[in-house]
Amino acid sequence: MRHLLLITALVACKGGTDTDTDTDTDTSGGNWDGSVVLINELLAVNDTIISDEAGDFDDWFELYNPEDAEVDLTGWTITDDYAGKVPAPLPAGAVLQPGGHLLIWADDDTEQGVLHLGFKLSGSGETLTLISPDGTVVDEVEFPALDPDVSYGRSPDGSDSWTTMTPTPEAANE
Image (tube, rainbow, N blue to C red; front, side, top):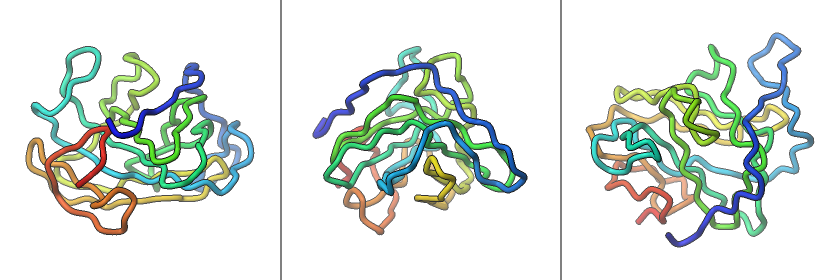
């Protein structure tokens, strides 16, 4: 692993309450400082690449911090259906270090912990949307249908260029 994620405090993920009728999510995460976090890689059909702590080979995506400062993920959310679902909260208290990666399981199994979200990725392709604490869409990727154990990622990390690749969970995309 080139960079490690520092989790300063992993407390139970709790999202804020959405008090209006639009598709953004008002969160209790506080004021967004304009930091950038990117969806860097995803694997929608994980047959053999990496298992979670329960031994399951679940869908996952990786976040990347291209900035020179750490980013607190409190209040950030993500969804695979921006128009139709309330976005899932990212782990409150998780801090993504400069140049760091964070793998999050999209396995619809939130009982397994704060790094497990309540939706799965579609192997047929869909759109994944990352939302800042103030409701701003910070990053979005529409990915194609993917074969088992083939990921879709930025190459290199943080670039605008996306391609299918051999998965590199929590490591630099080559």
